[in-house]
Length: 282
Image (cartoon, rainbow, N blue to C red; front, side, top):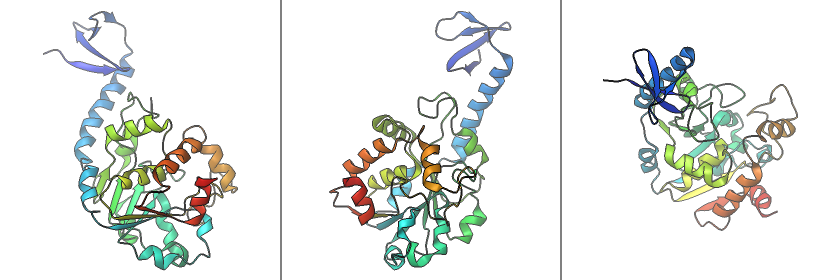
């Protein structure tokens, strides 16, 4: 049986040490080192599909008729004394390193029941993710914000993918779920930019059968972050300036704002804090 490979976004096959395009049957010249890379990529995807096979659909069932507080890392929550209100919800949801906000339970609440994570564990991205950390902060569920994407997927991750990030995740992370790939690709295409983790979290929860979603601590990055969440970005301690510079090529905040305006304002299922409501209306 002829073996078929993936190579630079095309299928190829080999006969008598010569390579041919699968569609046209014409001979092609390939770089053997690149071929090894592409074959490895395909093998890893099949391997990690099995490891991280939990579909988000099964996670959504746990949220039926539950109230949810989604808490972002904006510093405007400081001295607002909203911690008890946040903790009154059935589930408290945070993003990436947002579990650190529980060090100020008076303003940010004391729990992190569900963590949406970008999968990349670099400190400048989602941050470390392992079972010791989950146990320390009593995090019950982890959601991979971006699906398992190959290098040749037609998304904003083109030629990058997320397979390396999934590869770095510990295999034994408990209760790990990942965003549905086809739905994510459709969502990214619809809004015209790569959604950041907080946006994916809100988009995903809106599709769940929960009874209420309270959203606070989000500001489209105006004002930067709480120092508990992070105190520097790429060595810069002006957090608002640094984050807006960092995300401008990937996460178009005007397009994300349009999505929020459409889906959150006047939604009877959603409660917004005053700061975010003001940003979306102005």
